[in-house]
Amino acid sequence: MKLVVAIIKPSRLEEVRQALNSLDVHGMTVTEVKGYGRQKGHSEIYRGTEYAVHFLPKLKIEIAVDDAQSDAIVSAIRESAQTGRIGDGKIFVLDLLAVTRIRTGETGAAAL
Amino acid sequence: MTGFKTSKILGTAALASLVLALPAFAQDAAAPAAEAAAEVVATVDKGDTTWMLVSTILVIAMTIPGLALFYGGLVRSKNMLSVLMQVFAAFCMIALLWVIYGYSLAFNGPTEGGISAFIGDLSKLFLAGVTPSTTAATFSAGVEIPELTFVIFQLTFAAITPALIVGAIAERMKFGAVMLFLALWFTFSYLPIAHMVWFSGGYLFGLGAYDFAGGTVVHINAGVAGLVAAVMLGKRAGFMKEPIPPHNLTFTFIGACLLWVGWFGFNAGSNLEATGLAAQATLNTITAPAAAALAWAVAEKFVRGHASLLGAASGAVAGLVAITPAAGFAGTMGAIVLGAVAGLVCLWAVVTLKPMLKYDDALDVFGVHGVGGIVGALGTAVVAAPSLGGFALGDPAAYNIGSQFVTQLIAVVIAIVWSAVVTGVAMLIVKAAFGGARVSESAETDGLDLSSHGERAYN
Image (tube, rainbow over all chains, first blue to last red):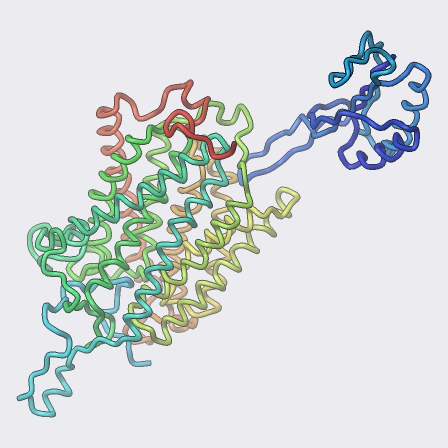
C-alpha cells in the first residue's frame, strides 16, 4: 500500500477530485497548508509598510491506495493539477505500513 | 446671503456665553416697533433643533462603531477587542466627564480677565442651570437652539477626540493606563483648546482663527497627542522586524464609510442651523474626501504599483479631516483642491515621514489626523478667500489670504505645543501610577484581547 501526498494549488482541487473519481478513488483527506518552494512569496503593502509574504496558501491531499493504483493516481493528479506555471506543487509517494477501518476493525487492503 | 456675522468666526462655535437662561419666546411687549426691529427677539426653530439632534446622532456613529471598526480592522486579530473596547470605554467615560465638568470648563465662564482666554469656569458643574428651556446662540442673531442640544452635540466632539488617540497607542498599552491617560488629556488638552478656539472669550477665537468644525480642536490636537504618546510608549514588539498586517480590511472599510457618513453631522451640524450653508458644508464633506481618496489611490498606483482599498479609505479620512476646519468656508471647487492636497500630503506622511522618523504610531493617527488637520487649518486660509469661491467672514474685498494664513499658523502652533506638552506630562503621570504604561512582553505576545480582557474576537 502507498500513501500519496500531493501539494497543489487551491484552485485545482475540483479538477483533481474529478480525475481521481474517474479512477474509482472515492476517499481523500484535504488540508489547507502554507509553504513555499521555487515560487517564493509575494509582497503586500499596507500604507507605509511593505511585507514580504513568504508562505503561500496551498492544499495538501492525502490518499491511501493499493500498490497497483499508485502510478495511475500520481499521473492523474499531475495532469489535473498542472497549470504549467511555477507553484503547481509536488507529489510524494510513501510506503504505507498498516491501515485500519475504525468502524469495522478491517485491516490492510480491505480497509482502503 | 446675509447671515454672516462677525460672531460667526468660529465654527462650531460656541457662542455659549450668550446662552440665555430665559425662555426663548420671552418678549418685551412694551418695546416699540422700531426698537423691536433693532433688538431681535430670540427664537428657537424646530427645524434647527431637529437638524442638530440628527447631527448629534450621526457624530456618535462616527465613534461607535465607525472609528472602532476602522481601527479594529487595522490591528492584528489578537488585539481586535482591545481596540473596540478602548474606543467604546473612552466614549462612555468622556460622555460622563463632559456633563460633569467638561461642558462647563469649555463653554462657560467670564469672557475676559484671569485665565478666561484659556479655560472656562465651573459655573455649570453637573450642568447646573441647564434645562430644556435654556437656549444657546447660533450664528444668526436672534436664532437660538436649546442649550441641551448644544451640550450633547459638543459632547460627541469631546468623545471622539480622545478616542482618535487610541489608534496611536494600540496593541501595547494597559487598559487602565489608556483610560487614565485619556481622562487627563481630555481635561488638560481638549477642554482648554476647545475653549480657546470656540468660546467667544477664547484666545484663538479672539485672534480670528477659522475652525469651522474642529480641525484644530479635534484633529491636530488628537494627532499630536498620538505622536507624542506613541513615542513615549515605545514601539510594538516586532515593529519593522516581523509582519504586523491589518487583520480585516473589510471592517476598516465599513468603519471608514461610517466615519464619512457621520462626518456630515460633524461638519454640517457645526453650522448649528439648517441653512444653505449647512448644505454647502455637506457638499464639501462629499467632494473633499472623494478627491482625497482618488488622489491617494492614484499616487499609490504610480509610486508603489497598486491602488489599494486601504489607501483609498485612508485618503477619504484624510480629506474629511482637512475639510473639517474649512467645511463652511470653502466653495465646492476649493474643497476638491484642499481634499486632493491632503490626500497626497498624508500619503507622504505615512509612507515617507513615518519610516524616516521611525516612530510607531500604530494606526497613523498623526499621519492622517495630525498632518491632515494641519493641511486643513492652513489651507482654510486659502479656500476661504471669496476670490477663490470661498465664504470668508466680513467684507469679501478686504479678505487677505496672507494675514489669515498667519492667524491659522499661530493657532496650529499653539495647538501643537499645548497638546504635546499635556500629552508628555500625562504619560509621565500614567507611567508612574501604573508602574509603566505598557503590558508585559508576554501579554503583548499573547494579544491584549486575552491578556487584558480575557476574551477572544474569533473562536
